[in-house]
Image (cartoon, rainbow, N blue to C red; front, side):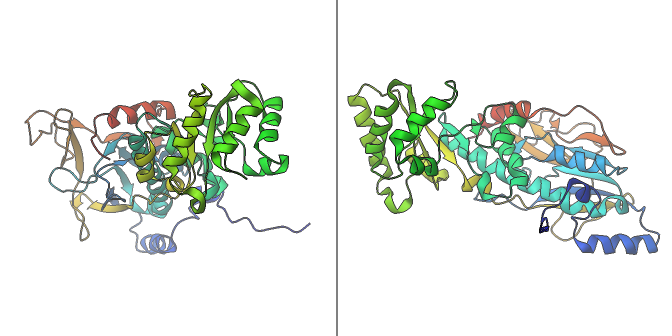
Length: 400
């Protein structure tokens, strides 16, 4: 039997620090030789912008970062905003917000900068795109179909970010198990082709699959969408609850007109209750264009391949002396938030109270201590709880 190389990092390899950039390894070696490995620093995670002209981002990945630092047994303190917080990347004065802080001896955690940033950047990027889609879709159903566009090892990460951002369901079996929900999906074109058409495929599906699973037909394999919808309806009658159109771009023409034709045919048969779901190359713009004629959307590449939030981790205090590289803001900072004005303000971390520059009222402090000397301090919220937290914030925002 031929043994193949496995090109993915195991959890053990990540915890050992093997997924870091080599310059951190060399830096640590130099610091050790110069007796500077225990030099104390205050480092902040910030970003210089939000992709796709975004106004706000969704901060995700905190739990994975804490797991990494905890499993690596690093004697560090961590301060962070709550996972799922939706906010801009700068405060009211243009100062970059510190989303997460690591305090400790630089030599202890230097090699973990690369993986911890990867955890934050990717998940926050997917979550931010997903929340924008949630906003665009309004109350229509959103399903995460994007795991086939990325390595299977990160499928649950993609779906978790989408679900937290407000998606109604996911197609991945493992993701659904972890989230405690039912996996959602129809049937593939391959099954319809094997069965010779939508009619026999739906008859088979209805015969063998649990009755509690919705009967939703994929109606675009061989014939005109309208024809295949009616064939599916003829096959299983009143059991048909929805249809999904995955029409390729080369055949789309006016997608809106195709949907209208189908709706008209269903109306003639008193089946206006049948839902119409769309998939295939959808994005924020197409959802805004079609949400008035569709009941739901399956989103793949647009979220799975979301541009990352380009977080960086930088030293802003060295042995209790403020310091910063060019383009960064020196010194320990706390984030103040005014519930009334919906404004954010960076101020000295040691300040007892932060005052809103707009209304003068006391602001809430967003950075909280979540790890002390390598130990996670509190029970972390479930994905469902973070989802509810994101939803409440979304309702207050005009744009994301």
